[in-house]
Length: 199
Image (tube, rainbow, N blue to C red; front, side):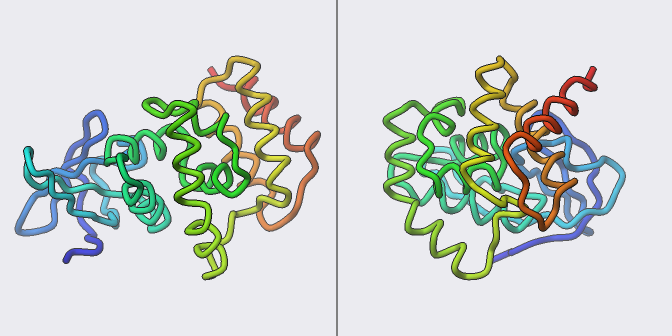
């Protein structure tokens, strides 16, 4: 089984890229094509999924954690690759893990295709797996206090920011506070400052 490939990103389109790994070119479904730069060599973590009606599909991820989270999601009964892609595109791996860890059904239910019932199902089925993942050494980067991050995401959502904007803002704050706990008001100020500067 192919775990990952390093190749040239030949082209991209909505949620898909063409990866040139001599001598073959692969069509790969991805959560967010903007993370893959056309004309550059990148390592893509791959997963081959078999659908009885459509046959094989190749899914690719920029980070190993993204692939791990995708596999966690599709391990839930009734949840397939479409939901896995929607979660990674809408929340990202880190925020999804935090939402499951904190039992935040409200945040999960904001993802396209996930209502309150599916959100509850995901938490019930995945909470112990997420805990095991954390115990294995994977950390929620710079999360400090999980409750703070979840509260900030809910507050930004209440202010009518989109899932993409919230994800970008939270990732920005994390990257600027890596490895240190931060308080709610600090996170909120930095997130709002970031969002106010976006076009």
